[in-house]
Length: 293
Image 1 (cartoon, rainbow, N blue to C red):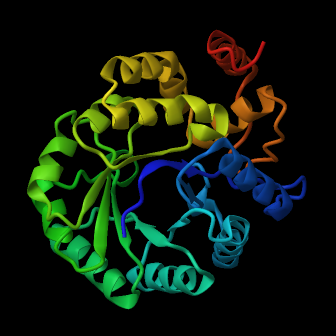
Image 2 (tube, rainbow, N blue to C red; image 1 turned 90 degrees about the horizontal axis):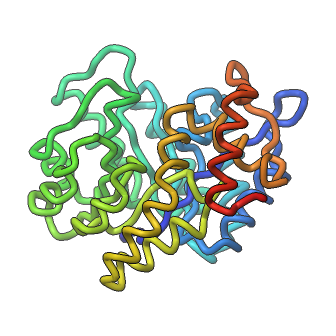
Image 3 (cartoon, one colour; image 1 turned 180 degrees about the horizontal axis):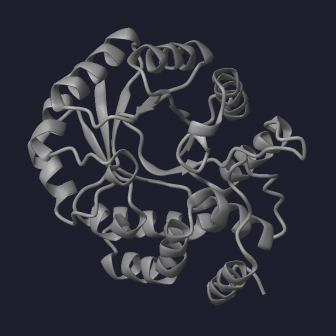
């Protein structure tokens, strides 16, 4: 199974007491569905996965799967520091009804390639769900090579690779190197235009929380072969995409939602709200995009 299109990554909102606000999470998920995203992804970087306890992570998956209710796929983040913990979360996601799982080689000590391969093999053998391998050198400190990712793609249930390195040629090289069963996805916002031109099946992004129609129109143009339209829609949102990454996804997405009158809830400590100066800069970007007046 492959996902396609714009995969919207969800913020995990908390209430004033610091507890996950599931009613607000459900509204966030419903909002992205109504905006037209093609899949929902709880427990990514914007979903503050490392800051949640095991039972909270399970509850988040259950809430989002319940809201989706089969209307669109749910890609659940299950990564953890240990193989056993990742397997446990993957098996819960499968029982809860997730459509696929995203697996990042979470690290403290820098893992070797044999260790990473064993990690993915054991996780993929523990569930029947499709697995998305996530390469993100910014958070792991490890940039998995094309050759190694292609080797991971030979594992039977690995059907997707999310590529978040700044190498502009990597998506095209992955498409050439990986088996036909494996689809490649843009993971770095700044690579969305190039990624679709090079055959990416989708874009994994938190930007729909703030600007869904921009991402969706970029995808629509890219899939229809309208390169000028795709370039135009990308240019309209690039300042926002860069801002989201530069200032941290949870705090910048939260501020972007707040500026539109959408309650984002509170962030899980130690994260805190975007500073006033940066919030003003974000407001000017949103005004330029005509998202707010």
